[in-house]
Image (cartoon, rainbow, N blue to C red; front, side):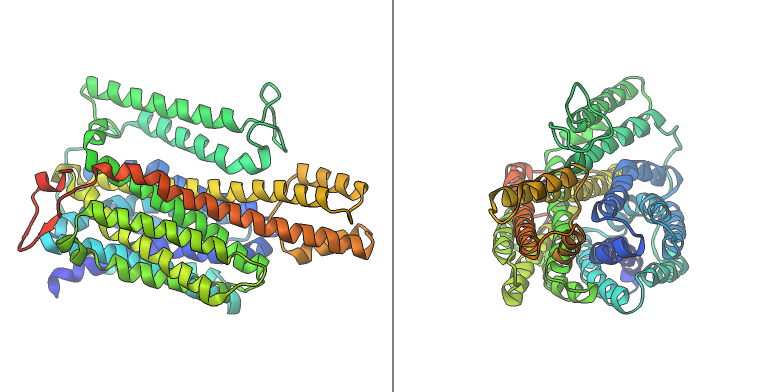
Length: 537
């Protein structure tokens, strides 16, 4: 039992990192109400949190190498705890963004790369496979407990208590951090500040462009702060981010040519299993966070459920993800990682298509619950393999850097998933509502023009009751009020289906990237696979 004490601390940290994202997603409607804002603003806060982690995760891994992984892990917990404390008392949206998105995000960039490397350093062979299965399972548990705990606390008390409780959990982990075996720090080298700046700015611009596409428009300007040659700035911002990322890669190559320590050793991307594993992590989190942004909106705004009822309906995905992620050690003995991941992608595709059929005016709880259970099964199959694939594809010296890349891919996927699926949702809502009111003979030309002007000024995903109230305040005749509300309700469901359909396309796009995943079992019967075997495929 003593050998698993380290896993208790590391697993609890992984659980904590996932917990409050799940809480935020299930509390969207309450956050909108508490801070007197819109869904898109909360979408921005959630996206910013994962973006901060994606932008600085590799930097956190470098700091772990230089100062010691256990020490960096502990410092990250302290920073995370400070952010949780500030979030719990946030009086305004910008303080929420500072405490949660920035401070907690920066704390996570120190904790997670060190966590991945500490797991790899503490366990070998089959024990390592077990450890990564447990870590993946606890990530699933965080997703399970987050909606349920967050939903109950949000509905009957206040969501702030979750973040106050996180502070207590952080203190408990700090008291037990000595259980985790440490590795001595490497030689301290000058941090590649230029690489940090270029990568962070590039990622930020790409995600910002995707996030704002719903309000700015992709090409035709909708409501942008400025235009470029008469076009919306969205594609120009994304292109600027891509240019900065290209400059980042050139900078890193130049750093290596000058025998300086780069932020990212680009030669690591020449390892096929590592490259494929990172691509899978990106796709997995795009699906998960994209759907976990859209589905609570469907349950709360369309179906009218409170946060606790929403958490109950998200429970099947969390339970099946936890159970299937914990099967990693067994699956590693009977199937190759490539086979398991491909099965996981196919299960995710089935789940997304099934979920698409459940988006109806009146929810079928049984069908919805089964679809969510299948979704969790697919997510768990991927989670059971990907962490081990990434860490087993590199040597001991590259553990922290691989961990940084691993969590960068995860959080970049989370950022892009929330931003892309969220922006598609709003964009589809605008287009569907425009089409519905144009085709409804009960709606007058004046109302069509007023609706068009309102949509140009910006649209948020609101309930039909709010639309009815707005229409009645505009002194529309009762039959026209009903027609506008019916058109909006239809548009709402169509936009949700479009968002889920976009999520369903991600597993298909990810499938070709499985080609270079390991085609040999990472844990063979009776003995662990060596590094060469792990990297094969």
